[in-house]
Image 1: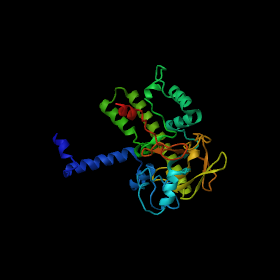
Image 2 (image 1 turned 180 degrees about the horizontal axis):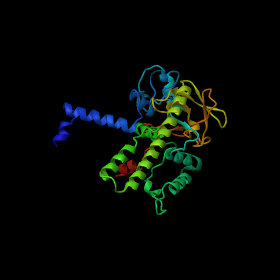
Image 3 (image 1 turned 60 degrees about the vertical axis):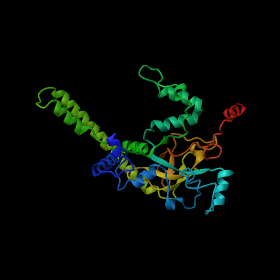
Image 4 (image 1 turned 45 degrees about the horizontal axis):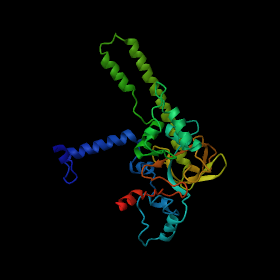
Length: 332
């Protein structure tokens, strides 16, 4: 009761409460996000939000401003209102700014993108059967979930990830995770302070910890090289070309956030599997960035604040409410 009351927004926080809140926030940042000079740009990029000069020469809908409630379709006037309204009510949005994670072609594609690719390739029914068969099986071989247990949930065509989730994925991929070597050694010393007993077991644990440390260091070095490469190539305006057919599928809008390979790009929605049914996004894709001849793989994702996208218009999908209930009430 008292603790809840003291933290009420209507009352000023005490110094200990402010310090605790600051420490909690710092812990959250350190646990979920790679180190960087500042957190604002990292958070903004991982959240898929463009700002300032990044919006220039693009329409409001291509910049997802309607998803952010930054524009109104019922009042005006503002610069570009006519084009914006026409696009919203009669047009098709074919490109949007999305966050894109760039990785090496030799890197294993993570499960969220594998599942999205399977659903796009096989369709919803076949994709769910495949996913529930491959990923839903437990140790006894039985499926962990069924379609019925999904409760009507329809997986999106691409992974839907929060900024914290994207930061955690980046941290793992780049090796920016706490090592367990020191903790393992400390536990070993605590469990066996006198030595002599279980010496072989302790040595085996130390060897395993050292191997993990070396493997983590290799991941860090590979991640640093990849970050450097992408930072040099991904300049605003640089093209993203699909190696399969040589077509430009996107343009870099903002370079990678510090400590990551996540950038903002204006991408063709059809090549992401979000518009129409002719093109699909594939987990085995290969792209070229700018003038480089080295191939990479791109892993786009949908920010949590995005609504469901209508595959026919590239805009927010509008679900018409059923009127049966209202008619029944009128009859009464």
